[in-house]
Image (cartoon, one colour):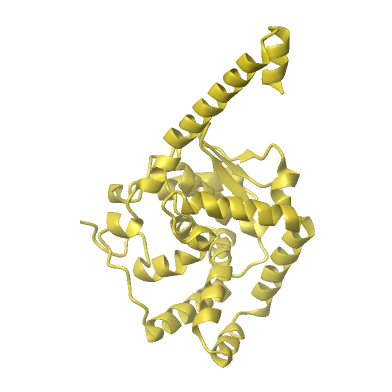
Length: 283
């Protein structure tokens, strides 16, 4: 609209107007790729940390999800994060003190999460946060429930520091949260990856094994999970959500993320392969 208004004021010919518009769109596209999409060409975190990806081992997987449920249950709390300045401080301190070989940019004092300009639209398509590469900002959905905020903030902040993979961003968010001194933040980390753990468990275990494993999750955690699903379902527009998911899936696949939207759930593989930020010596 601004371009059309400017063209009208300058009495530009329509061909010149279209050329002017195309030039702006082209440079915006180039800026976007220079600012962000080149990150998709980076090596994976497994390569950067010289870590061998773990092959699937049923006993190891079962042990992992059992340990996870025990930790999840123990961190459950009704408390929420009220001191967001301290949350930012802790999260930035965590990222700042990770080994250089992980390849993250250095956190800055002026990095603060921003609200979304059209928040209702993003809620309708299920977007809880995103990194805006054109201006280097992490944006957080204002409709987030309190117990989900720390995980989403840490996830989007990892993107701001150069992480492109959604699985890796989930991995970083999980470890940033569980390293917190605040139980509500730790719980947010464990709860944040629960849907991906459940998805992997359901596709790996037999029906009987899955039901038995899920029964170990305390009822309060299940209630929180249901609350989250109902909360976003009430805000969601199925049509817009499907369109956005299709576009983003295509975007990821066209930028060297072959699994597309499924990349989010691949965090489980990373958690088993690299269980801790400081779990091994990095060469």
